[in-house]
Length: 256
Ligand code: PGA
Image (cartoon, rainbow, N blue to C red; front, side, top):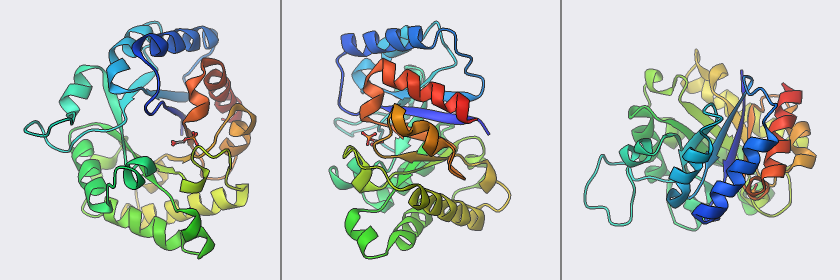
């Protein structure tokens, strides 16, 4: 399986800043063959067009939407549709990111609607799951990941997941905190995710990339990518700097 390096820029960067970062990234990666790594950037909506333009020299680098509303179009003030994202060149979306769950109060039900809708519409979707520190302390990791996966995957047609579904394990307490999950915890969570995927999709589970996210940086990315069942990374803070993102991409080439 190819590796995946996904850059989640969250609510950062004006158009100018986003364009400059991507231009620097393109220079960082100018001698890099990306055949074995899929790089995906998730800028703010407002910067999608400049990011797409700046990526013209590297069309194999993909772009995605951090959010969308699960309807074709309609009276949903402030929301954005998949067609609008596709129009800007997006082939990926995120669903269930912990900041959407915990800050914007998206529940499992809405996350499931979004995931199903995106996959049905032919987008690649990264389903994000992860436990809080409290849940980990109370030994509820298996239960939390299990129920987040179950509610999101229930009723999904096998045909809609093939080459489209990705899962990101992102322990909430590791996101943006500088704290990284221990290797054994990552390995355990990823094997749990794989086990659940196998229960739902026995034939296809092995093909579903499972990414890790939470305080990934150039200093730890190679090591994390070498853990069993880790097929890629979802990177927030460190992905805002072209040099760091470039190094993380390079580490995926060494790890593969
Ligand atoms: P972080 O964010 O790398 O800043 O911890 C990861 C994420 O939210 O996807």
